[in-house]
Image (spheres, rainbow, N blue to C red):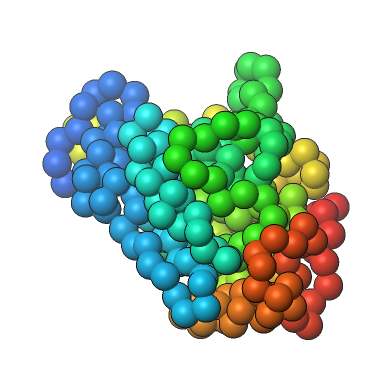
Length: 266
């Protein structure tokens, strides 16, 4: 059924999902029930945080960028812990989506001033702009130290937006594989006690590129197999820190060796 639905336009957010447990009849009930379970099982959306050799921090938000009212406290705690690091690797290889409000919140820890990230054009309604906040709880990482974002073919939807927004702003280098290509927001509708239809309801537009990553995915700046992305990003971060004298205070963008600065997409 999902294959037949997608044959119309290829939108990867258009699908029919089976749930083994009976789900509420209210719109979005199936999605919220499943999302709350994943939140509880993933340490509130931050299942991994560690220090790598050389003062590089590795932070993995997964499996989703959960709604900000649930996840804000965990995100603040995670960024406070990594704030002393010289460089940061954000691992989105197993992240399959999330809320644009949470994308904006995460960007608030990586940018030094409020920044326009995305405009969501909902069907039949006005566009909604999403900006990074000017103030965040805890300690921000800031807008100058090197940041890498890891991606895989599984990286999807809201996780793609985080990678895409930071890439287009020149704030992060994306390392890994081209992502899944799902830019359109969607809603879940319960059509049977065990079946949920997810329907795209809008279109995202990045203010830098004037477009989005729908169907084409986010192209990495450094393309390597997903399983090699962390090692490669760690090496690039150490090389950049060496170039800066390990002060972590440079203001120029972190450019991986052997590549040119990323230009906004056409």
